[in-house]
Image (cartoon, rainbow, N blue to C red; front, side, top):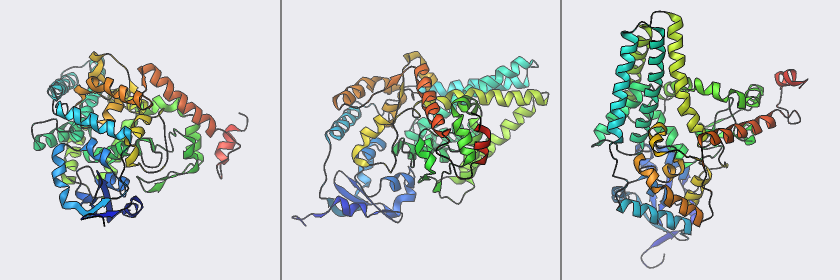
Length: 447
C-alpha cells in the first residue's frame, strides 16, 4: 500500500498467466480478464500469450480509443509497482497518438469499394468464360481470373478482420462472410484465430503458427529439436519424413505454394468442426457450404475432366503469388523462441518483418502488405495510409538503431530461398541423425 493505492510487482503479475487466471497490465493498471477471455473479439489466444505482463503497446496497436472506456470493469484495484516504459515504447505511443489525431485510422479512402467492384466484375468474367465460352483458352483464362479474384477477396477479408471497412459492424461482418467464407472457402474465424496469434508473437518459433510448417518447411534449425507448438498444443515432430522434405525445401517451395490453398481448406474444416469455442460458428459453416456449392458446380460445367483439373490447378497456382508474398514478409526475418513480451513490442515487430518495395501503382497487387512492418505496428490502419506513414516508421527505427528492411520482390525471394537452403543443408547433415532415420540414410548414403 502507498497512500490510497494498492500495488503488486511484475513478478507477482507473472503468476497470473494461465487459463482461468489471466491478469494483464495496461499503463500500470492491472486488469483481470480471466472470465472475459473467450468473449474477446480478438480471441483468447491473444490474452493467453500476453497474460501476466504489461501489454500497453499491443493494446494501443489493436484497439481504438473507444476501447479504453471498457477497461474499468476489469480493474483489480492494483497498480504495477515497477512499471517502466522504454524510450522506444514512448516514441511508438507518441507516433500512434499523432496518427490518431490526424484521423489516419478512420480515413479508409475508397479501397474497399473499388476492391468489391473488381471482385464482382471478375466473378462475372469467370461465369461468362465457363458458361458461355467453348474454347479451352477461355476456360484457362477464367481460371486465372478466378485466382486473382481469390487474392483480392483475401485482402478484403484481411482488412475487415483488422478494422471496420464498412459503415457498420454488421456490414463489416457481411463483407467478411462474402469475401472470406463464401468466395474463397477460407473461414474468417480460422483466419482471426491464427492471424492474431501471428501478429502478437511475430516470428516466435513456438508461438507463431505462420512459421510452424513441419514436416514441409523449417525456417530455423531449432525445429530439428521437435519443439512444442504452444499455439497448436502439440509437438512438431522432426521425424525422418520431415527431415527428407526439409532437406529439399528450397526446391519444393514454389511447387508447394501452388497447392498451398488445399492446406487452408483443410485447416478451415479442422477448426469449424472441432470442439474449440469461437464466435459465429454457424455463420462460418454456412459460408463454407456456399463456397463448396458454387465452386464444384462451376467446375462441373466444364466439358471434360482434363479441363476441370486444369481449371482447378490453374486457379490455385495463381494464388501462389499471395502465398509466396506472405512467406517473403517473414521467412527470412529474425526469429526467436518463447512467448511475446509486452515490453519490446516495437523491437519484435521490426525484427520479424520484411517490407517489399514497389511503386505506388502496384499497391493494389500487394494489398498493402508490402508495408509489412507498418501493418504490424499499426494493424488497424487502412492500407491506403501505410505508404504515407512509412517514412516516419523508418525514422523511428533509425533513431533507436532498429532494423528496417525493404527489399524488391526479387531480392525478397532470394533472401527467402537462401534461408530455406541454409536450413536444408543443415537438415542433410548426417552427423546429426534423426532416431530411426533409415529412409534418410538409405537415400543419402552415396550423397
